[in-house]
Length: 206
Image 1 (tube, rainbow, N blue to C red):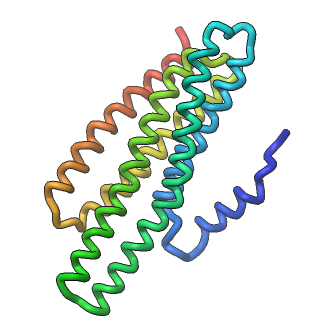
Image 2 (tube, rainbow, N blue to C red; image 1 turned 90 degrees about the horizontal axis):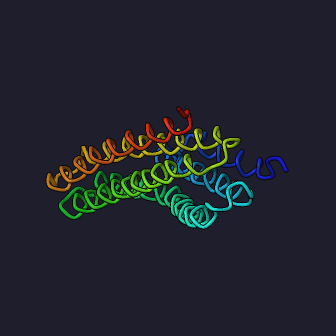
Image 3 (cartoon, rainbow, N blue to C red; image 1 turned 120 degrees about the horizontal axis):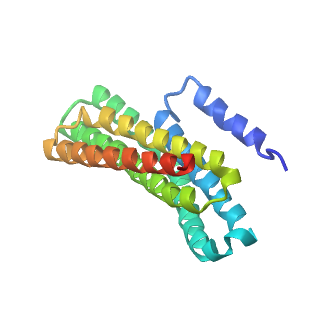
């Protein structure tokens, strides 16, 4: 029992603390989402082995499997976000060294990729929040604070990813791409807000 991976957590925090620009906020956002999915997975597992919740076990196992997949996706996105930002930095350096259409096109491609990665993080965090609404309903009351923390983490992960998308699209020339991203974020933001509120209302009870 206890935190057996404290050294790995410390190593990750030290990476975020370094004077390098990556990993940064995008990676931290994906990590927050991954932790949220992990907490909800735990609540599903604890609840499923309780005789009191035996009728809910099939659904809990289904949600748990989905959350495990979301967790793994967010872990991959945490790493991918850092690589995507590094590509932007490299493209900017190349444009300064050898200005021209080819270098500008490469930068635009890098910026689009650096926008698409946190967009995927935002969508995945939204799915975690969506799962949390059902876990809040089915989960054992003794783990309600764990569900609450998970909702907060997933919502923060979404909002952090949202910020990263917006900061990258501001330098993208393709206006259709930018408008599409903005519309998606607006819709997702409303969905996250509504689902998080639903989860907290359920946790609070009548």
